[in-house]
Image 1: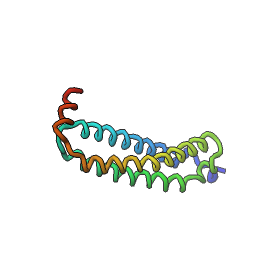
Image 2: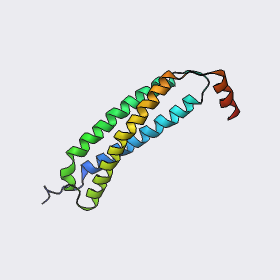
Image 3: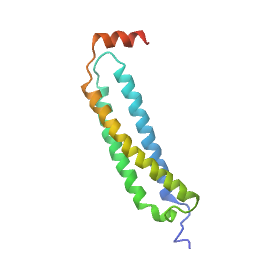
Length: 126
């Protein structure tokens, strides 16, 4: 029985940590994008945003791989850990869908042109 249900359930902990890392990366991308787009000129932050989005793609792919490889540990969704596994699986699916938005953000940040009107509006809001 100990072989069938190992204690502690290590994969579910790794999944939880990995999903938290994805959330932190998304928040960091949004924070940097808003700061960059509210700025008054092009900076290297746009490259950081682009690289962060590319790295997020890798993190989400890794999370999806770990989810598909860890179903056995939770017996396919049975019990409390199984419900947590299903929640992380749903979160991962949403993160994949959200990446489409971030790829549009990546394109906008890379092509942003800062005009004098934008600079004036940004200064009035500070």
